[in-house]
Picture 1 (spheres, rainbow, N blue to C red):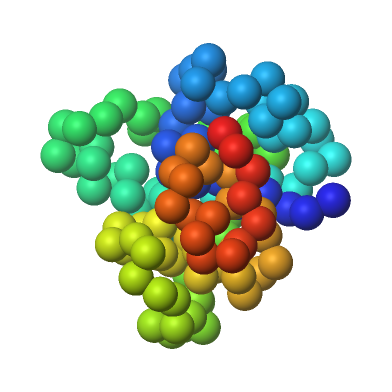
Picture 2: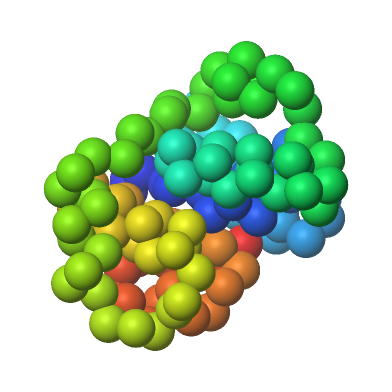
Length: 126
């Protein structure tokens, strides 16, 4: 089974219990045998948007992720350099680093963003 990398919006939907996640995807994320990762890029994006007052998120995000059994994924220099090899299907720097991480780490991205599939990485529809 491929490990899953959650796109930032999917992480937020998961944390709020949103019905925007399909039952199949929700079940897959909830399955403790599934390796679920959250990128440092998502934490960075959340922190920025929280500071700007554009979203609510738990103050104790690290503890919440740990409680959920989600693994943190640091951004390496290799991940950052991989972004330069990506075609310009997407301008969002957070999504581009997630794609780079998925490519190098062999992960499937869980997302509702149809543009991600254009990169040829495995995608799980949210």
